[in-house]
Amino acid sequence: MRQQNMLKPNQSRIYKIGLMIAVFASLIQIAQGRTFDRIIGFVNDEVITAWEIETLVKQRAMELQRFHNFSKQEARQQAEEDRPQLLDQFIRQMLLVETALTLKIEVTGEEIDRAIQNFKDQTKITSEEEFLNQLKREGFTMISYREQTKRNLMAERLVMQRILPKLQVRDSDVQKFFDENRDQFDKKNDLINLRHIFIAFQPTEVDRQKTIKTLNELIIAVKNGDDFETLAKQIITDKVDKDQIASLVELPISEVNKLSEPFLTALTTLEANKVSNPIESTDGFYVFKIESKSDKDIAFRYLNMPSDISEDSVNIANNTAKTIIEKLNQGEDFSILAQSFSDDTKTKGNGGDLGPNSLDNLTPEIRSIIEKLGKGEYSESVQTLSGVHIFKVDSHLPSELTQAEKDQIRTLLREKKFQDEWKTYTNLLHSIAFVKINK
Image (tube, rainbow, N blue to C red):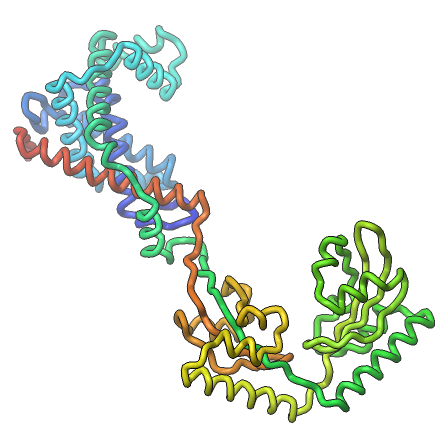
């Protein structure tokens, strides 16, 4: 198909379904306008005329232009290539009409009236006089037109009775289609349940004191009237994004209360325009400056300054990670090792559980490592700016489809089932009918 969609289903399959439905919908108009010219075939006691198939070809070309963005020439060429299929579908539809008549399927006068009105609406016929003139031009009377409409409605009802009950699509069918055709959808990434053990680079005492001295000088300057944000950006050189340094943060009190110590104490005890002492954390030192406070929220700025890390600190962290991996290779439990060794205070207590993570949310370096891990597998040590990580994949969670995608797949599968069931049933009718096409 030339239309864009959220998924790209098999084009030939959908094309065939559209062709079949076009014949089904067009039969009533062809039969209503039948002009008996050259006979090209027989279906039991009914004849097929060249005019009928030519009309189908023209209607197919119009459909391709209108709905599939074909040019006039392309549409006509494709419709001509479809001629054998259109003839086959037309024969099958004739068999359905005949079967519906044999089974005496009931159609009410009100249903015929609605079908006639739908035809008028589709062809934009606005007056009864115009409608009767149209019938006359096509060689029909109102009585014969209503009779043919009735027959086609009976065939439609036959299809509903025999085929629709078989068109159930289960949720498992939808998921199976998605799993088998992921490349036909917009980009989807599975969620991965991750654990990690984090070994922080621990600064030496000399490094710590150097950092504390720098921050104390900043605090004194701010107390003397210098701008906190400007000084913070001068201290931090190339370690973080400048735009993020000392930017204003506004948190409601309910969110402030969720912060861990000692950040909670610093923000709740400091007064407006006051600055905190250096607060040490696993990822360096923090200094907070309160801009404003109220009963509802706190506005503040902060500076996070990582300590300079010596080569000895890096080696110590890498050696610790090596020891942990040796224990993992010997079969020790990842969660227990995380509780014993990890420096990540937020996940240490629950065995390093990071919860579900999308691959899109990981750094390219870490993602390339995680993508290679199967369920239950753990990585080698991964070094970042602040320390060394060891990751473990607990499980892969399948991507979730949007409701719109589920509905689209369900419709696609129902159309495919309809095509298969329609063909199976009409094959049966064909096998017991007399069908002859003139060469």
